[in-house]
Image (cartoon, rainbow, N blue to C red; front, top):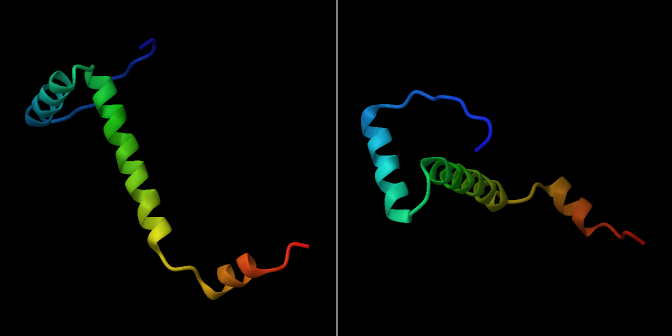
Amino acid sequence: MADTTTIRVSRETHATVARLAAQRRETIDETVARALRVLRQEAIGRDLAIPLTDEETTWLDADAG
């Protein structure tokens, strides 16, 4: 971890993250990075679950040839 900064979290949140990191045998940084990735993946999943608009369906069904 070459470059770092500080973020403010409650002592309770810090303790929770530290405990989870210890259980996973990884650093707090790795645990937070993993959690952020999961949150991004959940957002992508929600976006993909939204039905296509008629315009999007038409575009996808268009003949590319």
